[in-house]
Every structure is written in C-alpha cells, then in structure tokens.
Length: 129
Image 1: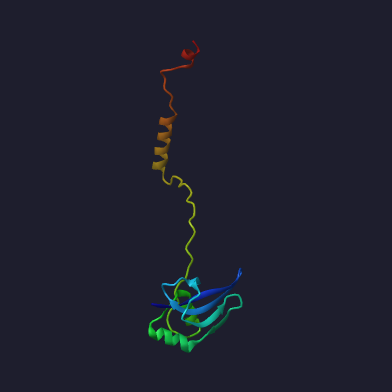
Image 2 (image 1 turned 120 degrees about the horizontal axis):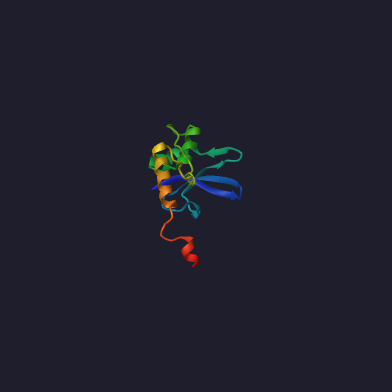
C-alpha cells in the first residue's frame, strides 16, 4: 500500500520536509521512495506541491498521512475536512484527593482515633524496675 507522507531532511532545529510517495511498510527515514511530489518548509511556510502527480497517486490508491492530508486541503488539491493532528498528552502526576464530604471526614477522624491509642498493659514504671 502506498502512502504520501513527509520525509524529513534538514539540520537540527531547521526542519525541511520532502513530500514523497512511498511504501507504507518502509520506515520514514529509509531514504527509499517511489517519487518526490513536493516539499514543505515549516519555518518559512514555503510549500511546493505537484498537484497533477498527487492527484495521479491518489487515483491509484495512495493514502496521504494526516499532516499531508491537511496540507493538500489548504492548497485546494483535495476537498474535505482537516484531520486533527495532536501530540500525545504527557502523563501528569495526580495529587492525592482531599476528602470532599463530611461523612468521609468523620471516617478519617474515627480511623485516626483507633491508630493513636496506646496499649495500657505496659507502663513506664514496670520498665524502670
């Protein structure tokens, strides 16, 4: 199955993407692709897309990635709604929940009373002798 997706080239902190048609099973950084159909520079917002070739590959059955799909819609090459592309949210540490109602406060208070009682069988006087 063919995919139309971004292929990153460029230096560190200077991203530049080729838009390529490649096999879905190949990793994006493999360097092997069927055809380059454009480029995208996110820093300068410069785009160059070969609309005729992209339409050809779409007619054959190539599927665009979510980001490329949104680029094609913004350039009026295809019609439709944009796909939401979001990063995965980072896991946040959950703070300990505070007791919300008075019944749970009473339960906590009664539990504290049980744990703070000391056994009466032994006293300090018996240890001293």
